[in-house]
Image (cartoon, rainbow, N blue to C red; front, side):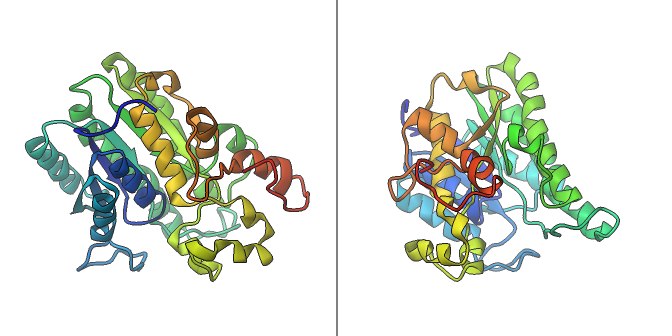
Length: 302
């Protein structure tokens, strides 16, 4: 790890829950001021109809030692994103870290494109791709005013894995590949300005929705292994959050420019752990154990 993030300003776009919340909190734990955005506030819910709010995330950032600032933003609406960046410029003068974790889309599992709902599929692409592009368009001019900026595009799966594996459905596969390619393109455009862009994937994430689906909480998540054996490799949102915090604190972060990274991979490099002290490496485990049809056993993978 390098220096702390005190005095640094981060925008975590899509920080209401899941990986975005974990990233915001861990940036706060390193001392950053974190703008926490999403569509669900204490007074209004998004179409996902989940109870988590941006205000809750901001409070967790404060508790961790940072300064959380919740701003309700629909990142599909350019005027709202422009107003957000104008506010950050006015109030902070700088933007050092941009994390695009915007998603909030319904997923159709295992359906070919001709059997999928076209309306749902195209909306998924808008929520997963257009939002990232709109946010980059407005936020990056502020980020590149000083060298050393970092952009993290959060996706699902490493480039190596996704290149040879079909991911869930046509629209999901396309969305995640597009986000990863965004990081590659941004790396080329940001490099002359001394900024770095990467794509980053968590492993099997114990998000609020995932824990709920398995009937467990973070405190007893291992109980789900009885009916979902490969859940043994899962990780908390804090793990990918610590990955982003490690990147943001690394004075030599430019070495990663344009690369596809995973939380497990970065844990080995930077030495951070998950909440339980382990280092789950899902993107080694999945092809070597789960996809290979071997019995679930996380030994040597966390």
